[in-house]
Length: 424
Image (cartoon, rainbow, N blue to C red; front, top):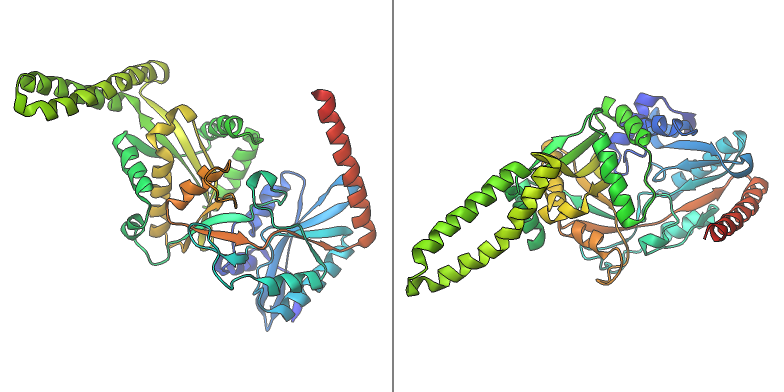
């Protein structure tokens, strides 16, 4: 076995065929991160000329000019092969030490415990053997966070993934929850169509994300972040950004026609005692159509014929599509466009031969009263399984530098806390 730096193309071929090969483990992700001051390396182990373990390493200066490395979503190897894991760990430690790196951070795309669609754990599936092996190799675990709001890891530990290999969209649809089926069908009735993003209209996605960040309380990124990432990934056919666009004019005309048809029918049956039940049902529908018509008139006046009301950012790499970002305007969530977005992307994923559709981050708290339960429940509606990943680890490369980093980081956190109080 030989530890080597890998060529870009040979790594792409290896990572795209690997079960854990997400877009994070790609040279394209290196190119994106280099825009923000990271340095990228690609290393691996070859046996008889064949790659048997590999990873990208992102390296950056942090507090006090101390450098750390990050292997996003962990190494691409067989984690059950403990001798290989040990050799690769030792080789990477030596490699990074020569580069003056203090520590390495990993968050493997590996389950800690298998769970079902409802988040219920499956018996005797805890991956404690791997946990113990990693700890014995010097990896420091960051803990098993549950609530998304308590997340300290760089990437979600709890994700939602749907197996689509060898399945048709009709087979998947049959297993969706009734509310999800209704949402998809209702969205279609509301004259919503899909529009693919390009560089000219990508600002629409930024606008959606900005609105969503204000509503849900997270920090959004600048437009330049999305445009640069989009340019790099689009060049490699590694991204797809879809918008849900509603046609207010057509929906208004359809609703108006429905209202007028009902009015004519009511006039015909109003004096017929035998039609009383029908009369009451149509009258009830008319009452619900009246405010809808008023809202649609206002929407046409304010926004014109069409408006983008939701969007999804999907990463295309290897055997899996990842739904990385999703955003929507709250006033238009009644049209259920996010359901149709996922449905259309699932059709695309099946047509393109992907094995999995990764809805990505969810909360590990499955209590109906929890803050982020709605996000989990939305993704569960597509019959996606919950995956509880093993979590995040630090591997100390240089003890002295790592100690300095922790001391400086504690001081940094104290200063930030003081600044917060002063601002208040």
